[in-house]
Image (cartoon, rainbow, N blue to C red; front, side, top):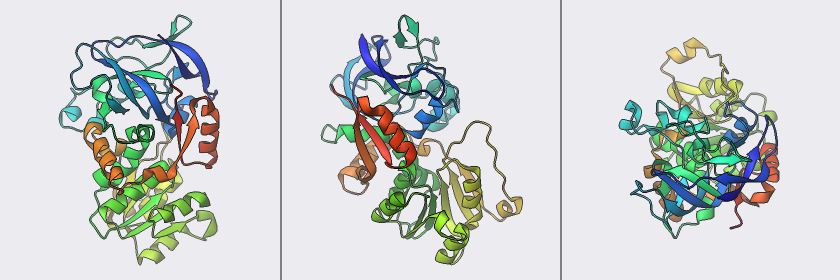
Length: 368
């Protein structure tokens, strides 16, 4: 079938809305009419080839929509279901069998190659040539997408479908990084470096977990204002203070119980570790280019401090995404507070506004 998709043809290139051809779903696949899709930093990292998904490619990995058709082997999803698309995994490796699907041993192959793992094919072609078309198992910068049954999550019909796509990656990563990974006790202190959609989702997670001191750090004052509105007890712009870590420790009367690094900057990760109390834990979410290294003081780590890497918020999407939807419907997880909608045709503007910091989480709405 012919569909419209945003195609990136070259490193650093623009997202061009073009006609492409999409296959019918195979036996274990699901065909989805896309309602909306979030724009995530990882889409831009692949555009710039920090991660080597072959170009040209259709990216997008925070999709939401309505199931149009399913393959003959699909049993858990039906036409008409409202769904969120999340990351893909193999279900068979030791981590997947233990429920740790975010740490699938073949995570890269399933999410960054743009091809089916089984035979190396892509469901998307253009002018007779296959292009990368299963980014994160979905390539949802398109009016219609194909995904596997395992990375399709059914959500309630009464939830706002156009809002829910970012739960598939960025929002579940930030919230899960606190709720699932760090799992702080009520009354704990939390310092979050970065106030983008991941950092603000982490803030909402810290509220849910009952953290009493939540400090949010960012260079963009409008994002810090939003953090205050969402419950941060203190915000810091590093450009407005002499020493960020001294300001944090003065506020807390010592180090933090937990910190979360979402920016992908090695110097910020060093700050996030150094601000911990003895026995504290730093969660690392920010994803810099492959090969990036960081310098830490070994003696800081020796005093019981932990550095914990986090992928996708340690979540199992089929379990965690419905939980987040329920929390949103109860008014306990208001991530709609930092969303801005764009028409699909305006994807380049959405990307520019995200990169400038003008908006926090862009969502593209498809014109069906």
